[in-house]
Image 1: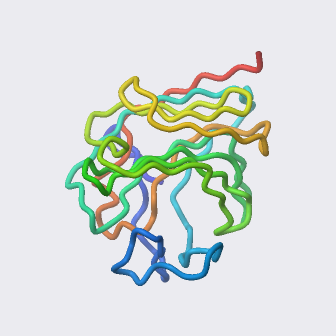
Image 2: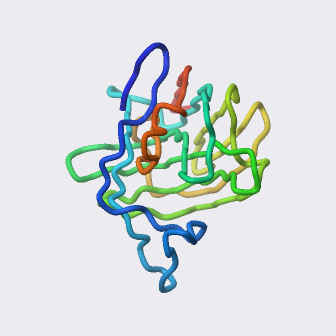
Length: 194
């Protein structure tokens, strides 16, 4: 994770093995149903320290320069997350920085071990991607997780595996030298335990 000149963005790619997702036909993606997509899964992630309420609401402002369909430039908000050596668990709400039919929003649960995640919901299309200046929000109240863009809910899911953890941010790693072209310029967190 890099913070510079009022921007937060991911580090330079160091992955040895590219991610392979169903939508990445050019990488030969696919495979057996339920098989783990190939990749190093080494996304730059920052989770806040300290004690945080279980109900979490995060707002962030996106910056996106030179959007491209060659890479999966994503901005990610973490909720109820825990990070320790070789372990990353919690929820992630994220958006692709692309306003075309290849844009998307997704909510995943990171199960701890490297590469072990469960997609709770994914929506694909221009209306789910983000662009420069968009305000994104992610929240979890009880077991309900929401993703919002510019005040409009675009995705939601429910899950009750993780009752606590910290909020944070992240970015997709395998983006070549475009890591400096997308990220956040603003980040705000509110939590409570009602």
